[in-house]
Image 1: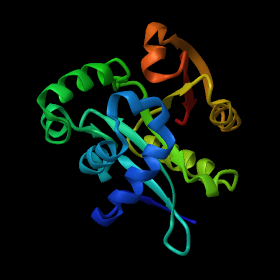
Image 2 (image 1 turned 180 degrees about the vertical axis):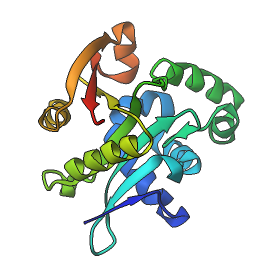
Image 3 (image 1 turned 120 degrees about the horizontal axis):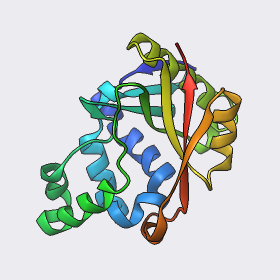
Length: 193
């Protein structure tokens, strides 16, 4: 397995598809239908905010994204969204997604999503990506990494805990659970410096 910062333009479709496979259940109502969601995600992916795991044979195994003041793995704004969904469709989607948005902060490096191909789960890909995120945080001068995990994703939370992340806050989605299909998320922090 190779861990690489960034990705090539030709990798966009594979990364968008894997992202949608991981997060489509949560984001489906805001970004669907699937074909439009894939076009949008593919168009706004930022290689500057990604760490990718690749198999020896060139298959994409997983991606960890991060968010900085300069952008995020899946960024984009109204203009990019309007190209795919139209002006009206973009307006309500931007509003809905803003409710999930996590702000960057100066004190902690924000991991903004990790996703592993189904056939690669349980083979150390997530662990290697988390290690790469911790290294990226250290290289950028951060002492801590922050992430959020939905409470229903117990497998991911168990991995984070094994890697030393500790829960620091829990946030309920309230009525938004009907839009995003999860009830709460836990903020977790890892000391890296």
